[in-house]
Length: 201
Image (cartoon, rainbow, N blue to C red; front, side, top):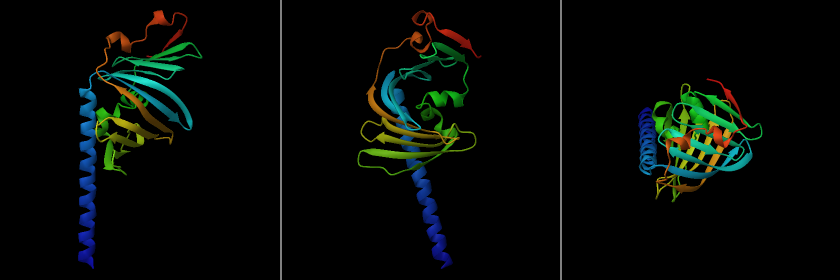
């Protein structure tokens, strides 16, 4: 009986290791695909604790700009500007890696190896599902990622923060090889002449 139990335990452990390796390979491939797509623009629907809105994110390496209609955030790799339309106010910060991750849901594809353990979820004929569990001080407690098997593009991201807040992102469009300049990822005062700038650096 003890021998059977040991064999079963080894089999379970082997499956867990194999599953983790498969999950990491999928994330590696997705990361490489996104990087190979050049500058991208992704349209999405975001649901935060039950409230939904649509928007887009433009990505160039670590730089990004997100537009959710009422809020626009620019990040040039060092400085972040967040414009809130209803307040006509811009907050300027030098964000931490965790703060960048909260504003850019795709950033974990560059640092998932140092803050998360990965395993396979319930994949379908069209999509892989990978589940990331945060360790130590990872920005998210849990991330569920679905990846299109044909394109290797992420199609769905479900993120649970350490405080239990849930953000779900469904990708609606994916455009690659877009033309961006450094100015794309910086706040331009000329476009918001009456906005109050709050420098929190």
